[in-house]
Amino acid sequence: MMRTVVVVGTLLLGIGAAIAQQDVAVKQDNLMRLQGKSMYGVFLKMTKGEIPYDQKAVDAGIAALEESVPTISTVFATNPKEDVVNSNYGSSQKIWQNKADFDSKVPVVSKTIAEVKGSIKDTASLKAAYDSIQAKCADCHDTYRVKLK
Ligand code: HEC
Image 1 (cartoon, rainbow, N blue to C red):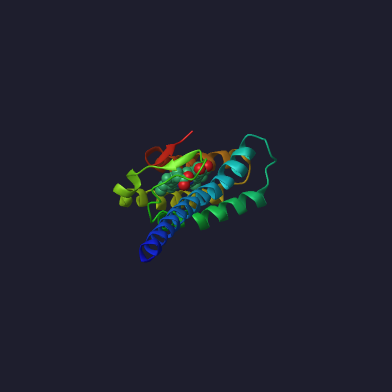
Image 2 (cartoon, helix red, strand yellow):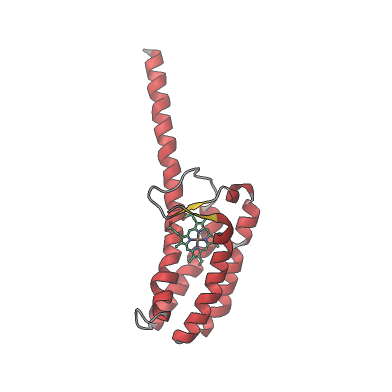
């Protein structure tokens, strides 16, 4: 009886840990998707003429990035040790071998956003700002993001 309780308890703990890890991975993935929404869902589409230039949407996108980019280091504080089910991208294990370097990529993104945001007033200036910010996002992705499919 006692043994059954222990076995069931251990099983439940195991399931709990698995769910917690998937939660961490999903939270990290959602943060990235949110930033992708401003960058690719709004800015990139406007620079390509797929949606009309809209200063309010640009300002909202910049504000969203200004708020979420600084949270990257803390949202990526723990290694979920697994990828989000069916995700296109995953985290490289290098992040947790070199967290200080990973974290050092974050303020550069914020700094670039601060530098370019006042210059955005039309499609051409948005394109220039987009390219500058994207280069900094890519600077982390090139090392720490893994393409899963
Ligand atoms: C300090 C590192 C770092 C920075 C800076 C960073 N990212 Fe990421 N990003 C990652 C990692 C790691 C992944 C893969 C894991 C994940 O998706 O959670 C990722 C994944 C993504 C994905 C794919 C999500 C998916 O699974 O579909 C998008 C979109 C994305 N990032 C957008 C951005 C944008 C836009 C910026 C810049 C504004 C940015 N990221 C800055 C580390 C970073």
